[in-house]
Image (cartoon, rainbow over all chains, first blue to last red; front, side, top):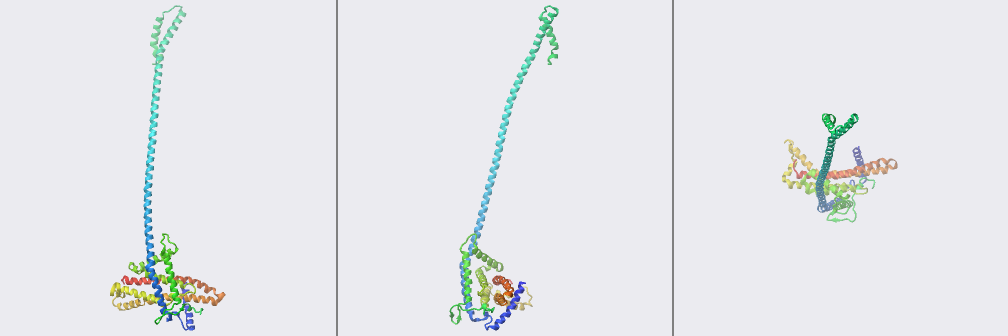
Length: 196
Length: 244
């Protein structure tokens, strides 16, 4: 669309150029050779000076700037990479320290636990022994009591039976004969009464 | 005079007449704009290359982007052998670009709208490229006119066509730039004249065209400078790497 307009207007403009040709005897100023030499001279002069200054002074500087920037960026990237590696190594070290200290803490905890357990078991053993001793003593006492019990009972039986006989019959009976009978009875029936 | 769309291309003397022998080398408006272009190029690139900060400022960025743009253009079209000619092609591109762009400012003069200027540049490129070609390849450079893989019957015809196309390079190169600049500026002037003659009632349409054309012409100004430089690179490529 724009192109079409463009070419149409070029076409239009040629009418004007034609008119211009008709109106002024000069026509296209470009084809007037009056200032050609001047234009060539100034073109060569300005372009030549510009070329010399650009090629000798300015362009080498720009290319140098670009190079140094490139190398500097590369250097910086390298430095950053190195620092990253360093920090990685440090991080690893730190991780190691942490895991080591964790292990240590674990072992300390375990040791403390074992020690505590040992203490507890030792105390318990002592207590057990004390309890055992007391039980043994108590049993001994019980045994003594038990052994003494039939004698006392025999004695009571002899005394009561002698008194009974005295009241019933009214006569003194020899204690030794009664105790013989009671001994004989308690020996025969001892198992029945004492359970042993 | 102002109504004539061609009067913007008039060359006139500024200051006294200077004559060297039979030649008139007076300072003219064309000379003024050549000097303005070269001075602004040198100023911008000098400022852009002065400091070398890692983060470039605007002017440094402009200089470095232009540098990499042209250097990439050359290496893409003419290869690494064209490196010694980088400064010339860079100057050429910048000169044409700045002359074109200066011409876009109202009431200025467009240096590149004169056939003699573009023809001198194109002729210099043509002669330079031909000389480089003969220095690099000797008479083997003439093989440029004999494309490989052409049947023997067609060969005479092809060789003639190739020679004509080679010889017309400076003409096509110079006329392309000159005609583009002249046509664009003439057309803008014509539409500007329409705005005046149609007045407040009908002048809006040509005015909008004029605005659109200004954008288009700025594009053309850049594009023609680019085309001029890239064609130079292509001719240089023919001379440096002969494989036709």
